[in-house]
Length: 270
Image 1 (tube, rainbow, N blue to C red):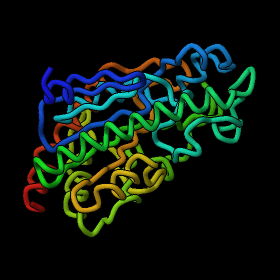
Image 2 (image 1 turned 30 degrees about the horizontal axis):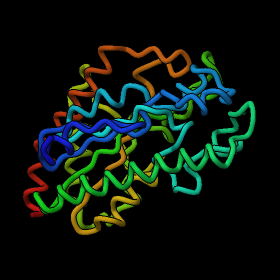
Image 3 (image 1 turned 180 degrees about the vertical axis):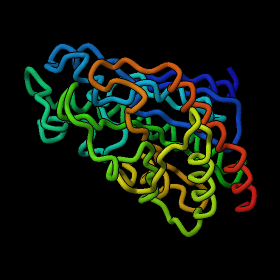
């Protein structure tokens, strides 16, 4: 297997990567739902409870990227979007007040989860380093979803004024450098024909970005633009996990429609 094959056909323990080269990366690091056995054995949460706090279907949207990075294991095993010292949830306050464990995870279990975390960042460092050398600049779409019906399946939805359909997190970057690209991306996403209407797309209203984009900008400060894209779960029932297939596909198309503009702005930066 050649070095190129190794990079573009990699399957790790908790995530997978594929791609064909190019400056656009799409990552879905909360898409995963699997647990390794020793974690599953002491997990108190049901599959449905875990699924509700994960980001199902975001992996399907990574087709917008030349490179796709998709988590296969749950954030309840190790959260790749939190600082290392907080990457393994241990108390309810670490995870939205949820009672996670039948028994507290041992230090050995935590260490093995953190080894997965370290392996992920080590490999991603190599991947992004190669993109930097090849293209000079690259863009990472950090794809997520978020809940807005926390009062129950029949409860009232959260205030739409504080919960946009799409939240663009740019709080971890030097926005002045990437401002034109960010503005173009937001405008193109907002102006997409979403079933004869426009999506409510706003910046840094609900989230500003987590550890993954923060690490990217700290590690590749002159070359990487990592944009956190958080879709409110308006396209699915967040309590049952059942999606609207037509909306899933439409969201994918809306993201794809932004790529020409992003590439154009990236070319100007180069």
